Length: 205
Image (cartoon, rainbow, N blue to C red; front, side):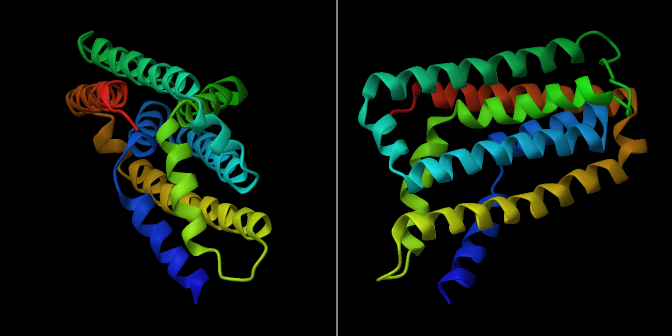
């Protein structure tokens, strides 16, 4: 029963709009489904890293250091603000830059690293992993082993949800590719990313 409850909680968490959703949709709209899935895989690699860190107590070490936490927080905020500024700049250039659908290995690598970097640079992900996963460890079970299993399940649920979002965005490619629509999406993406970055910068633990 605890696993069913955990999966339900993961679905609700995945559906809540946030940094991951903004970054993945941004990459999908810019360069197609392949780029969106690459960003998704990068994000989920970061989620898995934080989940494993929580399982072995490494997240606690990071969170115990105010300096380490603040450095990660400011770095993550800077990444989001820069990405948001890039989107706003593209929207002002008349016809936002569109990467070809077949972006190749280099393009997918960039998208993957974008997803991975934004996740790893977000200390809120570490806090969430530390507070979220342990709630679903049954009494008497091996805590590290169970946390690893839960982290993997969390990643799988995320992959299904974000995969659906990427597919839907890809299905609407004809509409989303219109210059006016793309400019508006770039502006919305830019404002959202900058807002998330500013919030991350000013928030305490």
